[in-house]
Amino acid sequence: MEKHKPVGRNEVIRLNRFIANSGLCSRRDADEMIRKGLISVNGRQVTDLGVKVTYNDDVRYKGKILSAEKKVYILMNKPKGYVTTVEDPHAEHTVLELIGDTCPERVYPVGRLDKATTGVLLLTNDGDLTGKLTHPKYKRKKIYHVFLDNPVMNNDLTRLTEGIDIDGETVVADAVSYADPSDKTQIGIELHSGQNRVIRRMFESLGYKVKKLDRVYFAGLTKKNLQRGKWRFLTEKEINMLKRGIF
Image (cartoon, rainbow, N blue to C red):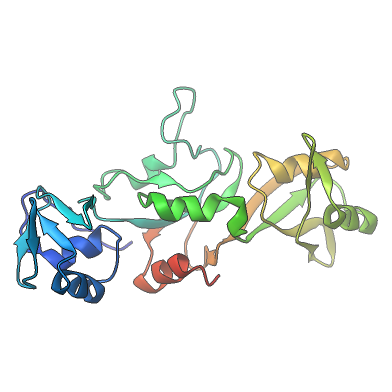
């Protein structure tokens, strides 16, 4: 697990780093914005690249205040028995307990996995990215490994790709196949829908019960080399690819 150094509110840092930490752009692009006079600090326009600030300063881009909090992106292999809500008085455990105090910033799960579902979960405090990853129009790919109580018939696989009615909405699997050709109780399914418990409900409508559900892929992220219940910070490359939406 990568170390993450807490940020003090009175820590003095270069202005371009402050801007980059806000998630607005890279440090190089921040330098260009400063040169062009697009950045103000405590109400005064700044063009000097050497200016330093603290996280308590009022830093703005074209008059819009920039958040001082460092953007954090965490990939977790969610275990069974943990809910993805931030606070739930009825839940024994939430995924935030697995992070503990190691990350000083307050992060939030992107989307949701129900208590019994395991696998890839992204947590962040980047609200703009969360919106793009969860909004249906961006069609972020999700792939699940489904374990069922009975072998799935071929014609039922076809029905999943043709569409299943869930609460008056037709949900279509983008792709579906047997995860293990020798065991037809295991299915791999790809879809974009964000409906609650959608996969369990799709299979239930066909007469099957989901015994185990594991998300193996979300928006280009996998749980490779990440044990169940463990987490890590995303690399800069992964963050940039998520923001560019190339997955």
